[in-house]
Image 1 (tube, rainbow, N blue to C red):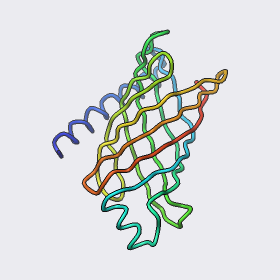
Image 2: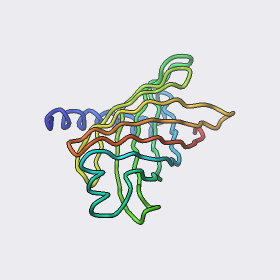
Image 3: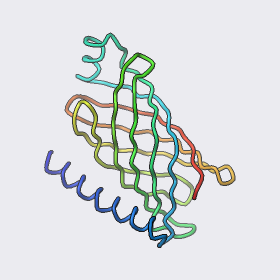
Image 4: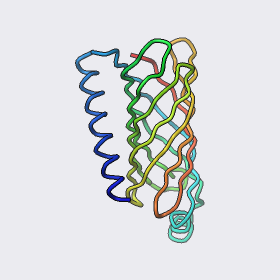
Length: 168
């Protein structure tokens, strides 16, 4: 499991570096699609038990953060490669500070459907995150709706996030 996680993390870093370098150089149609995110997460397994017993908190928490996203390898009317870096803070409504950080490599179809996978780090340790979603457009405003599953030995986390960004 750790070897697979390490391989995925290395692959993510290579693609992320490529996307950022291309964004800086302005080549290959790279577009920055970063913006705020908010949502809710359901925590299961050992992590939920720890929240309930040690912190007297329910295992449904708010999420607030920012999604850094770069689109690369884009062909008009076809699928687009994307790299995402998503830091979140959860549980503030219950007086908690639960940080997490996800890095995803994915693909977005021409109608806005998307899928991504990558590493996740939180206070419970390293995990794998997979996300699906759709981005709707209102003029130049993009409104992403995403559902993510984080799988770790401590349990699963199921998140729904929404946000917005303007293509730059």
